[in-house]
Structures are given as structure tokens and as C-alpha cells.
Length: 369
Image 1 (cartoon, one colour):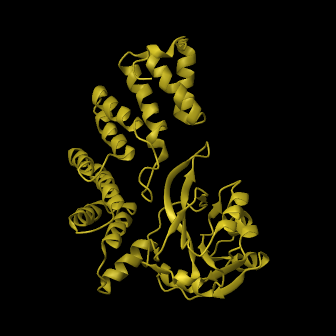
Image 2 (cartoon, rainbow, N blue to C red):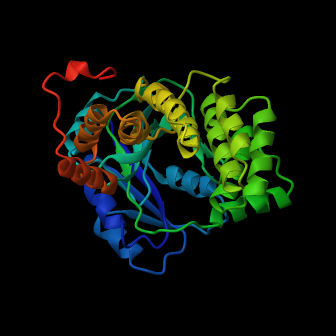
């Protein structure tokens, strides 16, 4: 059976490290923890889990730290997690079973990355990341920020998921400062770095600079298709934030010229029309979003709510405004199945209960059910 070395970089992660390691420790053969300057109990927690502990001087380069961590692993496969990650609850036995099936022909394993669950436990965002790589494939992390593993060979996709559960809130300018230092040093961004630099500008509410960088990225040759599609959505968000509503709509429509539609884009187009109270136009785009299915564009960012809950929530409102109350109730019931504890769903439940409206005995009378 293949052996796995979990290689982590940490700094002041006492709040989350134990939770992380408790979720995965039984399935790994070696634990490498590289500390970049902790002043809390991080090191002691790592040692309690049997970690081989190393120090690494932070040099504003995540890849440098991760490559050092990988260099210390001796297992057949090198795995990474962050301290505020956990293996999805209940997936440990399946992970151990997957481990038994690993063979030299499988160079890497990619897994879903689920971010920030809502009140019902559904992830607010998901995408796919490379998670395990064979050590003899000489994998290398690249990119000072938003780093990725560069390796060659066959990758196995596993539906086993890693959940990202941060306890720290707020936006940090750390990544933006790293990018600025790279620029100041004369470093030339590749398309991926250019895109993520623009995203950091957006996250720090430097919208005009972000707009300029997003537009430059879209003019570059190359760049991953998923980044280009999502760039249109990010650009639209920045334009909306600066009051340029029509330009934002244009950015969203531009994404439709790049590839087949994404529900995340269609919901933003629908929101544009809904805010203008053009109910028919908003209805069209939300219904279009409901026709799409998640998981069709592996690796790209995905907002699960955009494929079911958000369109149903808004179509409930739209149907009610258009006087189609049975249809509104139908969409409300869909929302109840998906996120019963969402504040808007609770409000709508009180609204429908007080109205005395009942579900039709024959749901087929609904024109879009």
C-alpha cells in the first residue's frame, strides 16, 4: 500500500491545527509541519500529533515554504492541507480505501475544495485542487501567492473533499503586499499571476486599479479559460461597486462569448434586471441558471447556490410580483428543501403561512415546474 506524507506550512494556527490533524492523521504515514514563526501553541500541538517539526524563515513566498515542506517528506505521495482545512466529515474510511488503490501509474490526485459552509452545511464555493502527488514525480510549487503544484502525469479525480473552515475574518492585504513587492522587483507576471493580482486589488476595494488589471488580463494571450470566464464576473463586480451598472452588464455578457454559460454569470445578469424591476428579463435569466448543472467545468470556481437555491429564491419573489402566487409557493418549497434556516426562507414561510395559500393538488398545472 502506498504511503502518504502530509506536508503543512503553519504560523500561529493553535485555533485550528488540532481540528485539522484529527480529521486526517489516521490515514497518513508521516506528518511534516513547517513553522514560519509561530508565537502561540502551534508547535506543541503539532508535536502531540507526532509531527516532524521544522523551522522556515518566511520570505514572502508560499511556494518556497511549501517546496521546503515537500522536500522533507519521504512517503510515496506528498499531500498538502492548510491548518484551517479538514477532511470532510465521514470521508476518513473512504480516504483510507482510496489509499489502498493508489499505484505508481497515478501521479496525482485531485479533490474538491469546499469553502465556508452555510447554515445548512452547504459550501458557499467549491473548486478542484491537486491534493496528492507522487514524490518521485518531482512536484514543484510555483507562484509566490495562490500557488499551484506543477507536475506531469496522470491525475485521478476523487470526490473525497477537503473543507476550508477559517476562524479568522476580515480581508488581509498580505497577498497584495507580496504582489506589489514582486512588481517593484521587476518580476513579470504570467497570466495567472496577473489575474490573481487583480483579484487581490478587488478584495482590498481598490476597484479602479482592479478594473484596469482585469481588462489587461482579458487582453493577454493565454490564461486559463476558467480564469477568463470568472474574470468577467469579477470585473463586473468592480464596475458595479463604482456605479457603472451598464458596463458591468457588458462585462457579464462578454463571458458568454468565451464559453458556454455558467450559472454564476447568469445569476448576476438576472440580478441586474431584477434591480431595475424588469421582472420578465430577470425571470428569463434565473430560469436559465436553473437549467445548468454544477460540476461541468472541473477546477473552476463554482458557487453551488447559483445552480438551485438563489434562482429559486428570486423566482419566488418574481412570481409573486407577477401575480403567479402558486408558482411563487412552488419555488419557496424548493428553497425550504435546500436551506430551510436561511433568513429569507424563514421570512417567506411566514408570508405564505399567513396568506393561507396551499400547494396545488396537481403540480403539473405549474407551467415551469
